[in-house]
Image 1 (tube, rainbow, N blue to C red):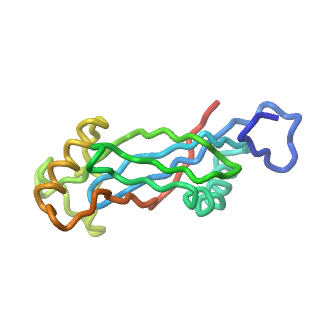
Image 2 (image 1 turned 90 degrees about the horizontal axis):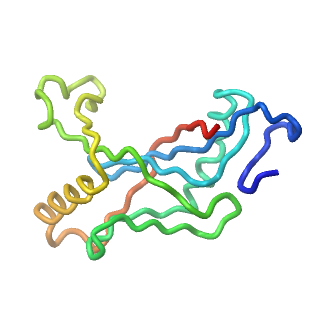
Image 3 (image 1 turned 60 degrees about the vertical axis):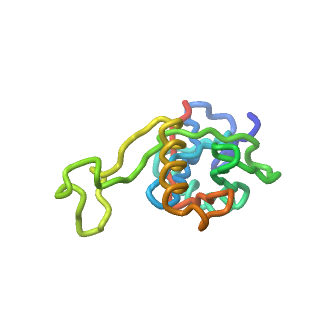
Length: 158
């Protein structure tokens, strides 16, 4: 079997099932990104993969702490020793800002509108955090800004 792989329902000999990994959406205020671990699992369907991801989520996030370190000017990712994964990758950095589009497009009954999210590079993400938090909260923040997991999904590996 492959390292960091879970097989559902004992189907070790069937190689046609796709591999997935859990995608964890991390957020702090108007800033978010996706975090992926190197833990992968095999599932017979997308629905089965989502169910497994849902059951694993609380356990997986207990091993991760993500903060923005203002001294280092970058995200600091601490991974506690665990049996599932030992590395993570980040993707899809987004900033929620209703000033990016027409103001009438940013309001909905849920008070959050997808039209107000801007995809940015990691560098732009860091620059915006530095600008906003240093200008608005000079004495109110410590040297770290903690990101929390608030949703999950899956991504197909193969």
